Image (tube, rainbow, N blue to C red; front, side, top):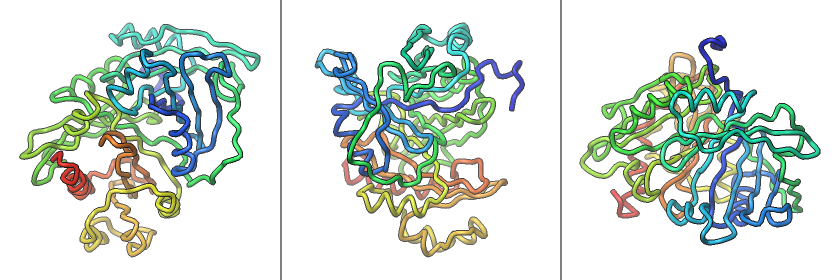
Length: 367
């Protein structure tokens, strides 16, 4: 871990990810049913909020908030009307939300939320926030003096409908899509404003197919708890999936959230049984997998029907799989990842993955 002099913005991890959605009650039911989340907390008219409703779901260390406006002229309603359902907030846990705000805004970040205290009988939370790409924001959440269920203003969310977990553990990384030639300015933002480092770079020679290409840089904070790959489109014969995302989302935003599991085969079997759809790579991907990645603990013949991908780096290997978009617009999707030592992001799978994405794009008429 970096020393305090280097790490002016110490982050303790991802606190929550908040989606603005068209119908939070139904979205919560979907995430419980399909992905095995449990209800944690709720706010809305019954708790004194006349403007919006929020359902907080959790699975191990993953927390999602699903928020819907109650009136059509509310900014949240305008957000969902323009973008569709999408990620508004990537919240980061800090020890000092006032200092996090000062450190980032003094380095050029645009304020989203001045530091604000919220209290109830369980203590006090301090939150602040800054704008990042598109309409997305980072909130800094200081909860060291709070022992309530989630945040002041929320009450416990109880339900008689509680599907079992599928084994999701924590958010491994969140990937942002930005526009043409915007990757490097946002890389610089994370370096200068938040003290992140660029730990991996993929250019359009590594991430390309016959038709389309993109470029990506992975940003990581000092202790490695928080990683944000940033993608931009690159020139290709046809439209890349990043361009398709930008068209349908209406600009930059969170492309996918990667969530870790300790047993990807078990997790994927459970997700598939609940109706979650995954991108399928060609069966030929597995024909020379053993030669490509070397010995692995899993049985390749069991990975093949599930469509799970494998890649190796100097420190080990990883297994990963990507869902299809989880709503009608071809925007946000999920990655399920199991790391067996590997710290990388599956570069060896990019070609197979993008060809699978292009098949889906072709079916939508967007290639």
